[in-house]
Length: 285
View 1 (cartoon, rainbow, N blue to C red):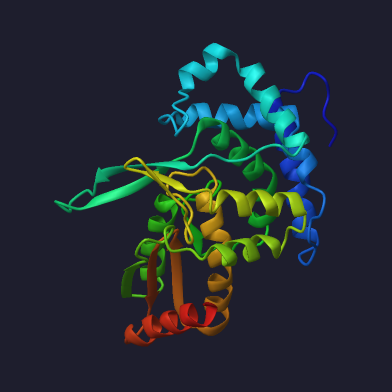
View 2: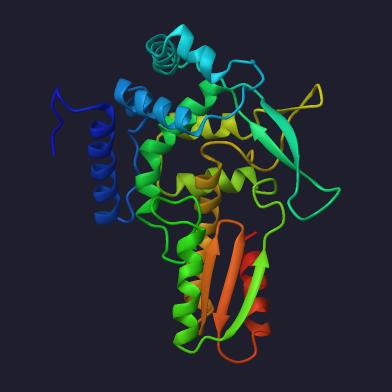
């Protein structure tokens, strides 16, 4: 389906995403090697800006706010980012770390990483391009921060499974899921379907870009910032291998995975299923 001059950036991006999704679905072993040139397209960057603006959020380490970006001119910001990407000059800034109380856990704090607005826009642009490719492979058991799939849909599956007789339930959470993701594993998960060296280079630059925490910049050797636009996609890409292994090896138990929370349903003694989960995770490294 071709785009026309009257199409909005959102329409043009949707056409691109549908094309990439269909290509990935029809050729499950294909690795996509020419993607970077779509990231600096004006329609992609404009749609990325629209999504970042919709989510609002605080300023990053450069103190650039959403309002200031709009006041300076969105066209100017988009053009600058497009030029930096096209000329291979783009470099991410460290992430600003802030802390907020954990709900229901007095005295405990949750760290949130806030990238600069410019980095959020580029991350959103890359996500617009590569998410359809990765989505073509993701399994039905994974939910949370996926298009049209979230925790609400995962919870809605539980009564249906119970009705079918799966009345033994285990609720498990992965501690510090994003903070503990192995960065090499994240890159490898993306490279399974994406071979464009410049896209992979962007991933390698974002992951260890560093964190500004209480006035000191620290280099990160593991994890992806909780608060990064593209971090949930990294998590699903990494855990995709786990989802496939579960479907193959843990028959008789239904897995519902909402990013860093698991619900396992089945019949009989639930403990062996949980142990199988642990063995699969250990096997994945």
